[in-house]
Image 1 (tube, rainbow, N blue to C red):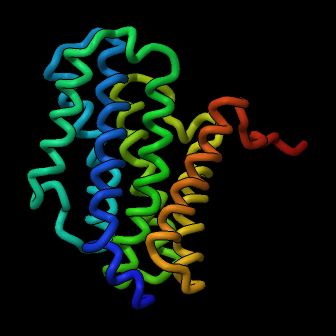
Image 2: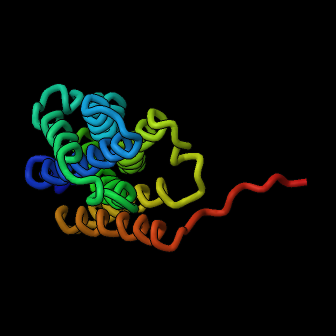
Amino acid sequence: MPPAAATLVPAFAPWLDLAGLAVFAASGALAAAKRGQTMVTLAFFALITGVGGGTMRDLLIGAPVFWVHDARAAGVCLTVAVVIWVTPERWWRGEALDWFDAVGLAAYAVYGAAKALRFGVPPLPAFLMGVVTACVGGIIRDVLAGEPSILMRPELYVTAGALASASFVLLVLAGLPVSAAATIGAVAGFALRAAAIHFHLALPAYRQRR
């Protein structure tokens, strides 16, 4: 593990974690709100979307599941659900869910890769842990909401998370200061996802060969 990576989690990444957690929780609560669900359902969607990817990452790398040992995580998710519940619907119309999800995707991809590096995971699996952290919560949200999973749509989503995670890991390995690597990785992932939302960018779909 690069020496700089060991200092990332205590010095910088917890704030990135909470930011990603909050915006992912908002996307989950909005998915329930748009379907006219109850406050309990909003809270459940916020929690499962917020912690889903991080839970999978922690189980895979052998780390304590973060939200079980840190009350702030569940507190952030539930607070976000209450905020969505009490604010006017017009505040959240349009593509608000997509934009919240884009911010969470980029932040969580970087944090997931950073935590994996800190736990001694080699760079390539650490990059993949960043992708898992960024994408699993949104996949769970879509399945519970009865939407086609983001994995089954051609739009750039997982690719944006992969760009954020890979950029961070490569920049840390190259010796760039960790805060700079995290910032560049998150901005790169968000920029790609934002472009995909705005311009409807998508990867080419598989065509059967005759």
